[in-house]
Length: 69
Image 1 (tube, rainbow, N blue to C red):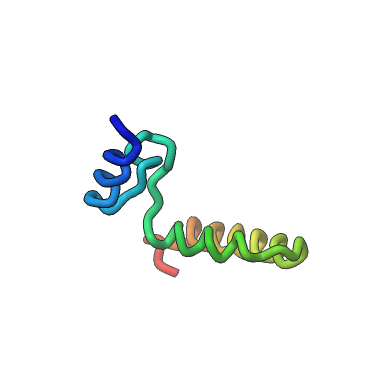
Image 2: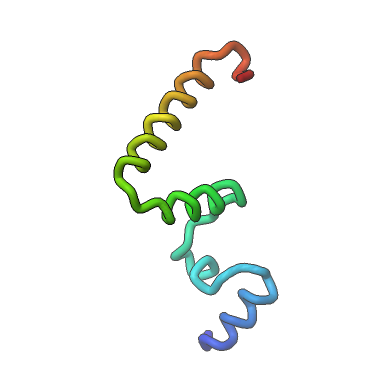
């Protein structure tokens, strides 16, 4: 398949050529937004703080009855 045909097909399917070729993992909109925000954070102290907060929230969520926070 020509590259131009692949690009046209990807555009018609609202995806990317990489996804059609299996090079790109799917992400839901939350994952895309969260990853985009996290990639912008360059300060190591802030990164570590965010990781600790996410781990704490995950523990809270996992131990809460019926997963209601």
